[in-house]
Amino acid sequence: MRGTLSLCQRSSQLLLRGRRRATKETYTLIPSVSYCTNIDNNTIDGPQSPRVKIFDRELKRKQDCKKTFPTALCLGGSSEAVRRLLHGRGSIEKLVMMDTSNDMVQLCKDAEAAQQDSNQNIETSFVVGDEEFLPIKESSVDLVISCLGLHWTNDLPGAMIQCKLALKPDGLFLAAILGGETLKELRIACTVAQMEREGGISPRISPLAQVRDAGNLLTRAGFTLPGVDVDEYVVRYSNALELIEHLRAMGETNALLQRNNVLKRETALATAAIYDSMFAAEDGTIPATFQVIFMTGWREHPSQQKAKRRGSATISFDDIQKQFSSDN
Image 1 (cartoon, rainbow, N blue to C red):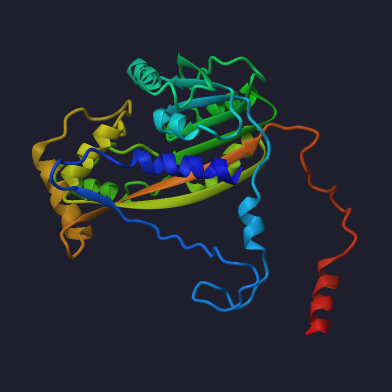
Image 2: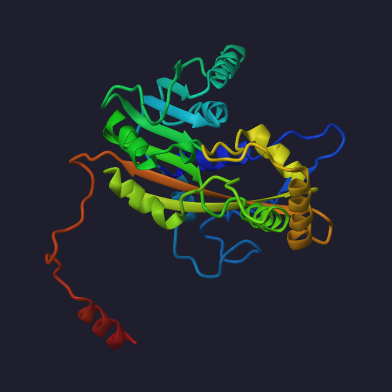
């Protein structure tokens, strides 16, 4: 499962890459630095060696989810990036690529035709469909992946329930959605600019789920063994207008039913100026936060571990506390 989770993390990073100028990169993703203690377990000294050894790090690197997922469904978002990264993972034999956009599905088809050798062992089919009305037979797939697409659904719990029903027993649901802290800087700047220039505010940025809601969504949809994780990516731009251009390229601009289709020029310029004055760094760039919430859940199966019956414990916390107190 860890290997599968990193798939969505890398896919979200791919999605956050925008168009770049030929001569100069206009925005940068603040990199996260990774270090690995790839050393012999018998080594005690050394610049990368921990002084206290508790875990077998070499063994931990080999541990992973051994379950296979012969049939997988990929929903919307960065579907093409996910398709490339699925190669050689999870023993996938059949892959269904689905998106609400016919143009996006066609792009995936064209990419598949251009790279036949890369996924030649995976039978791939393409479907134009909606997550809110999932055109997939119940109990027909082993894995459902949604990478940065479900946050656009009107009925997120309902869409997740349909994903669970599409899974076979002991099937895995793996999703990444943009969380409530996404574009917090732009929300503030836009609100202040509208209040200043127009005397009121209109919805400009989508409402997004909070981290605390993710676990409840999984439970409400009926998934077992729910898991939630979160990452934040800070992307730096030369100005707010470049950020908006990037959002357009990502397909992440305003799609609210009650949106105001007209953005006054003076309001847009005021938003950029306020954004710069409130959040600009010393080098003149501005930050934009993207919060990605990762959710994992399984369709119920008798083989899965379950919580013990209430009252079945054979030792109390008082006994544990007394034991630790006596040891100290």
